[in-house]
View 1 (cartoon, rainbow, N blue to C red):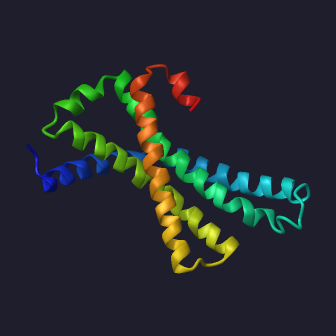
View 2: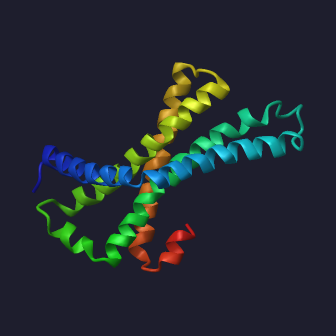
View 3: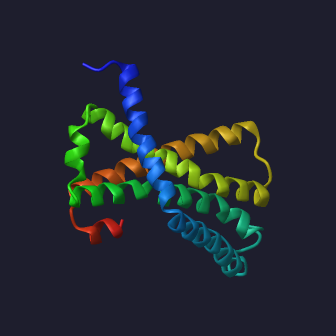
Length: 174
């Protein structure tokens, strides 16, 4: 039986590996950042004239939290694609043979997805602060809690989907 300290250390080592691999795909990351900024600008410009300004005075401020959530969704979900590739290449046989528990492996992969989400979302949080203004302490706590729950959920779901299906087309449709 592994103690809590050992479990956390093993999980951290696995997540550190995943985070390192995340930074190896810097062009993908830049493309995703550009796409989300483009989403913000395009939606803001298009819907600004369509949405009733009495209800929503500034559509860019209205859509910014949604794009922020979308950014953490996309980056946290990438861990599942890597798990799917590793399953097809049978890298998982190597990972399971390492001297770590399977629970630590799973927790580390989920933690890796969460950390990816926070790294990726950091720039969008700065952009959101520039657009919407500096939040109060209670709003910061709400942003942190929402981001943590969303990143954990998306990482877990993407890993689950990747292990349940071997078809890359189904994973890409997620």
